[in-house]
Image 1 (cartoon, rainbow, N blue to C red):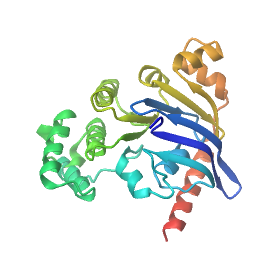
Image 2 (cartoon, rainbow, N blue to C red; image 1 turned 45 degrees about the vertical axis):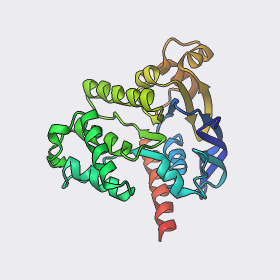
Image 3 (cartoon, rainbow, N blue to C red; image 1 turned 90 degrees about the horizontal axis):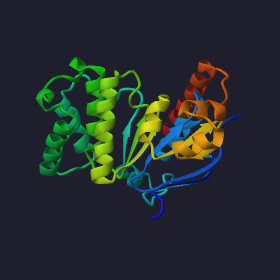
Image 4 (cartoon, rainbow, N blue to C red; image 1 turned 180 degrees about the vertical axis):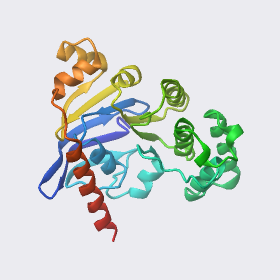
Amino acid sequence: MDSIIKVENLIKRFDDLLAVDDISFEVKPGEIFAFLGPNGAGKSTTIKMLITLLKPTSGKMTLNGYDPTKDSNEVRRSIGIIFQDPSLDDELTAWENMEFHGVLYGIPKKIRRERIDQLLQFVELTERRNDLVKEFSGGMKRRLEIARGLLHHPKIIFLDEPTLGLDPQTRNHMWSYIKELNKNEGTTVFFTTHYMEEADRVAQKIAIIDHGKIVAIGTSAELKGRTQTDSLEDAFLALTGKTLRDESSSATDQMRMRHQVWRRQK
């Protein structure tokens, strides 16, 4: 397999809104890939199509050899997801959150319990395994979400702004976990972030999307060279402009997407 993620001429429209405008890119197996863009640029819409939550208007996608529009179950078994918004059950313990996830994925009991123990140790939550999640700090919850997302041994893990709101120490520890996983297991990492120094330090390849279009793809060094800038943040601004983006417009786009998903699921 040359690419574990392949996107060709992908388009997504919501009525009169062109959210994703004919984008193409590839991610190699075992690559750490950053998908960057301003608010409302089309990042979340693209990810939702990749992880089977939205159907594209047109274009092609493959993940781990499967088409998200036709092979949704196979795609979902191939991926782990850590969303920007918390998705844990606060009324369950750390161990119960992991156990519930493992049961949903049909992992046999013996293997499931072994993996839960290993992953809780991996994210340094073994001593808090029987504590309710509502008692956890934001950093602890994020670490537990990472452990849960890895429980079924995904080929690809999607991280949507995984370090938003975390202190520098927790951010550093979280990326240490992810890089260790990438190195030891060969897990492909696809992430978004607004912390440019984070993408600069971690990503092996970067795609920048703006107004629904891919405006640049390359390594951090290549993007800096193309824009003749000294930092990834300056390169990002050179490629996307310095105009402030309307947060309310981004929120409206999110509402439209949720409404489309709701209508499809009825």
